Image (cartoon, rainbow, N blue to C red; front, side, top):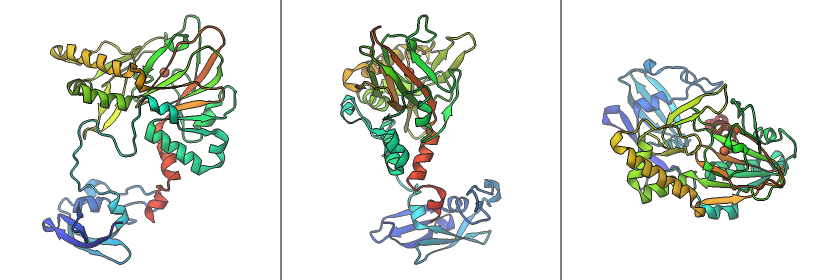
Length: 386
Ligand code: FE2
């Protein structure tokens, strides 16, 4: 696939260019290549971690020579160190940075697919026993979580704490002031509106934390109440709709921080200052924070822009509340759903006092999930070195 058949040193040794038969190619800088050398003096053969600092590499590093060999490797000699290092061409091809990004603010990587309410007809779902015995099935389920920010795990035990069994399939749970896991039951005088029978507008959890919980697992133990369906909304789709319908509003929510706060218990006062729509420096849509219950007084928007900011917030809320955006479903006992809490909003319809509804929730972290998925996909270091 790489099919590089030619290499030339360019820019007086500051870079090289790998070319294909059709004339296309990739450029790499001397300093980048030297820093990414994988020889045992640069990276530990044991754990793959870098053994040198940027200061150990001469600032005047350049490419003395570069040759391709039959083993699909590029061998580079660096001056003034007179150091020779080989790079697998496949490794370079998958780390190419010589491209012209034509990305508009709010772009998403190819691994991410947004959805609307029609997603309800194709919710990713896996049986817990299947996930435990079949790594490929688990890999597929985790890849769905990465792609859609949502998946259901069914067929689990109907017992308190069973949600941890699901989380242990792929990662680690973050403990918070709500405990290692928390109960979502109707309560009299609840400490949090989640513990009533009221419907809840779709939201991301705990935007008042920094860092925000990256995943949430909600697991059902009882659900005999009338109503009480769960619903999820793709916050990335909502943000992209806002960008389309109201580009200035999108930019306002991305450019200015909101404030979030929770002080609903005597021993807790959590605060954060983060935007509702979070973009990376290159415009990638990284996250959405949306929670009417915990939005605090916003104080980081200039006076002149506050009315437009509120109009943008109202517009985003209207998109979130659009029934066409929500995928709804009813959890059965022994079922749980996992959402990417940096992206997907969850909520519920109201339910009646008859019957009971008892869920347990926890916050597994996404880095662990993505790590498990990458290893299952063969992207671990052992595979990369081959
Ligand atoms: Fe929630």
